[in-house]
Image (cartoon, rainbow, N blue to C red; front, side):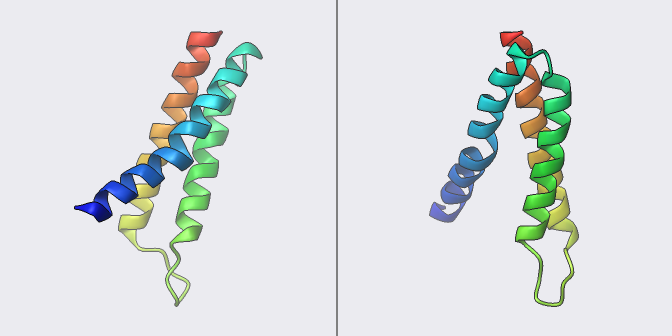
Length: 85
């Protein structure tokens, strides 16, 4: 159980906290939709590259988890930006 807690906290620290800050700033500049898409692409690229196996391949579970985190981060950026718009 401690491993899941650590993974949860790491996910929050590197996806949610920056997403809130980016959404907050992008909302003032009226660019929260573009910022949400860019942040989602950055998250999925970084997450999938951070879990490459030794043979250079990325498994499907990693891509699915990266996609979930990218969607979550993008939605957070969008809705925080919408609130500060």
